[in-house]
Image (cartoon, rainbow, N blue to C red; front, top):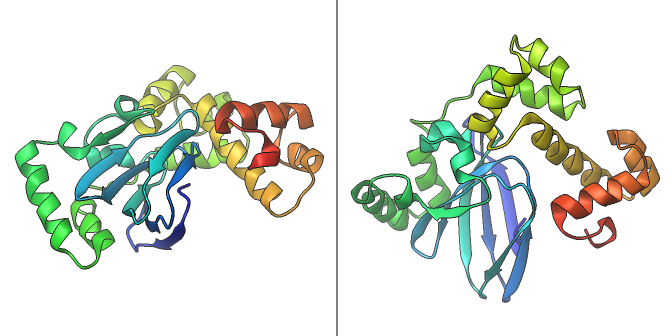
Length: 225
């Protein structure tokens, strides 16, 4: 999550959340893995943020403004037309994925739009597709179900699920399950739930396991989150 004045809202488009950020002072932002892909407008450029396996740090100057669409896990590849695995742990210009002439035209349109997120939605809306199978996979993993059970529940073998997950999420179902479990843990911790209770509530073996996973994925101890 970027630091500064942040807003997030429903767009009315299935699978896409709008967000904006104004960075008030020069800061290094820690962006946590969430299984999502983003289409971002910043500093006159259209950017794509791929799915992260570990926390990413990004330096932003004072006054930098971001506008973005966050595509929930499994949805982004339909927008960008490439497997999520090709964007894993990366931040690239949209012109590295799409033809430069097309991106120049889209960049001009978004730049002229008073509502930057609305401009991004105009790009994404005709392309976005929600795959009910992968939605069910995300739901099952978020519930903490074993990968084999999730695969069987959607009529796939574990090998088939791995292949589809790499395309849809950028990594396998076990990695996505770790990311989703950490999200749940951090949400509970932010509400003041004691670490031992957090660990038991979301399926970690114990508090030490929780601490190791947060450090591995977020790059810092739970106490600093």
